[in-house]
Length: 154
Image (cartoon, rainbow, N blue to C red; front, side):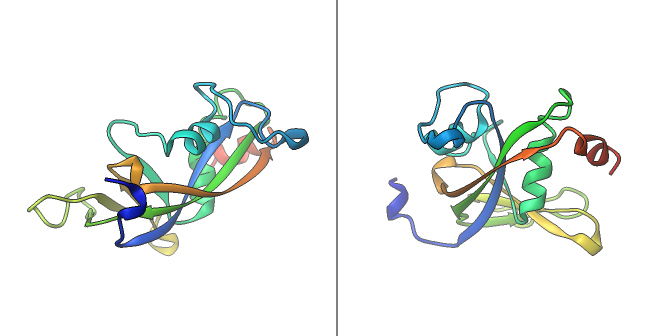
């Protein structure tokens, strides 16, 4: 099924990724083929599917936090990207507090689960088919190493 022929339940979601190549530096606009360059993997071949699904966030800050976890073990400054994606969510199942999914009949294209506490509630969209995700805009920035301690203490 071709991505452009699908029409239904389109959402905008964010995906956080690290950059290990020179994309965006000094006018470089060519994507690399490095296995761990998250932004080039997303731009070049859709959002990476891990364990059969892609995870996208409702808020850009959550996408930033998810991507920054990859940088924490090294404790060094890292170039990151927030990618705004159009997503064809299709039929959506919703999870409950106990991890149970609404609608036992199956046939879902994606699942929504709540993240955060009630005062800062947000949703994470888990898409089972990476072809339903179209990266649209990329914002590249650097995470200073001094901010890693602050993020770990949250």
